[in-house]
Image (cartoon, rainbow, N blue to C red; front, side, top):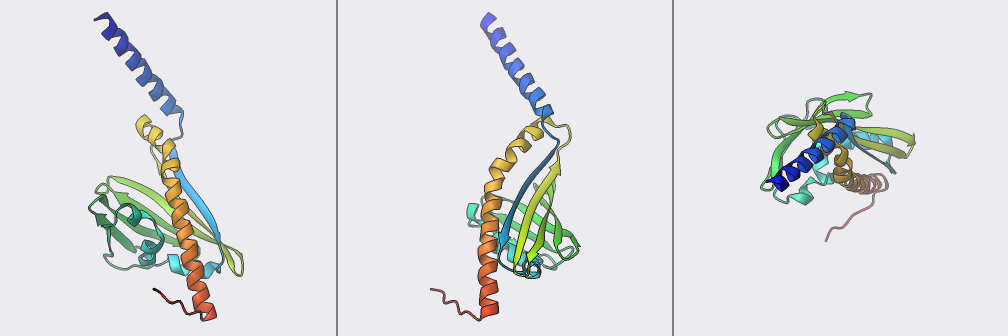
Length: 190
């Protein structure tokens, strides 16, 4: 009985230490990645403006090949919405909330029947006539919840590589598409 009390005291002290540590972590969590691409800013923005194009470069289908996308309503601009569901994925949706200055798309990502969400944006910035930087950000305020703060501190390490791969996919897709369209290159698929 004495050892059980000691063990419980140690476990309680560990839990308390973890909770105190978690409370020192920021209440605002975010994932942010950017990439430089070799296409004009307006070309990149026009591509991102249509949610149907997002399924071509985001990585979510790599984790669940049964993922099916749907588009209830319009696919371009403010209030455009993309939904997806799969056998191994929870139903989710991405909605464009607002468009800023033809260079930034603000969106809301929701899953768990709307109980879990992230705000975010994708922004294009012209470097020169044929080069653009694309920044992709998800963010959320988790308040004082120590468990969510702890999870949030690990989120960038878990999701960041998916953002990197998605932006790499986007770069390849846009640069090929731009070169084909502007230089009349014929692409033969096998």
